[in-house]
Length: 413
Image 1: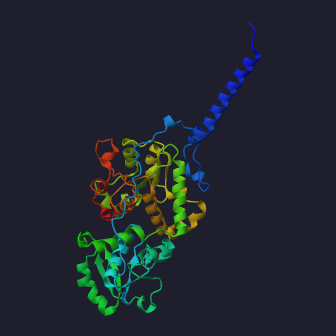
Image 2: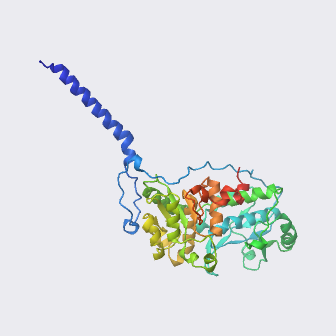
Image 3: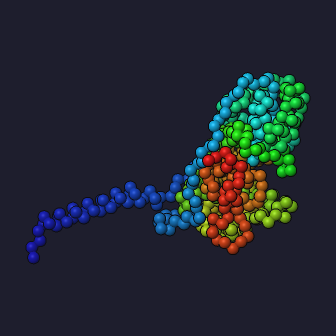
């Protein structure tokens, strides 16, 4: 049978067009999904010891019990403004060396200064040792702090030297100080001295809640708690780099990672040993596996330096890291070590607020404060371990979230 050459050529051209079209679809739509995510050039590969990344089909990606990010809640407050002129008096205070206390300390003094009409002196930050002090600007963005409080209280970066030389009377006040306490215990002293140093006490027996009818004080507190504290740019860049590295390593979970507040020295304290909610590395590993997290899940631990007791956790989740492994090498000298332990605390705190999932291994003020920040961000996947048989992650969501009984909910709608 005779073959028409023109028909043969037409068939070849048609087939070639289909092949070209197929390659275009693969290149533009499929290949980007299959390529490994780029890893930050600052990652220390010899320290990470991660499993070798491979090419994964979409059907093979294991998500685990991930929850989509909620929309950030809307603030319920309207930023108040000055009423009348402020006095010439000053309120001084220092922040503790633990970042989980800072927002509450600032909220307390802002409420006090506002009610007294006082100027707020820019605080310093206490170190781990009694005589150690850091400047506020070493950790936080000073300009943002002052700008946020503009219209609420006046902030002075350089108060008169004669007022801040240690001769200012110190007044200890409860957290969430009430207006009645201010009027009866603080105002009389302030009228006489015109300068006070405020120390906020977090003893549960002295903590006082403000009444629901005191909406103005609540507005001051909310602004101070959630808008004043931003890391200074260099430190923020380090945190952002570490978050980016973890997301790059989290290939199978689409850039998601879990942060676990697990510090070996805390687990060994008597208070933790007596607590029903206190979990070591092996127990955390078993728990996360039970509720559905895949072995390829990337985990960040607040532990400083690797401890052999954490090996059992890494056996279950090989991509488990401490800050030592993912901090940019050129920043370690500044932000890690015995002289820089306070920096490490801040890095851990903000890493836990940025993670897709937060898991506290023990009860603490750190847990409470991280939850508050996460509520403000809409990151409500906070899982608290417990000894029960359920394998559903939803059965372990923090009571702060399920019951909406965290104080942050009074600030957001």
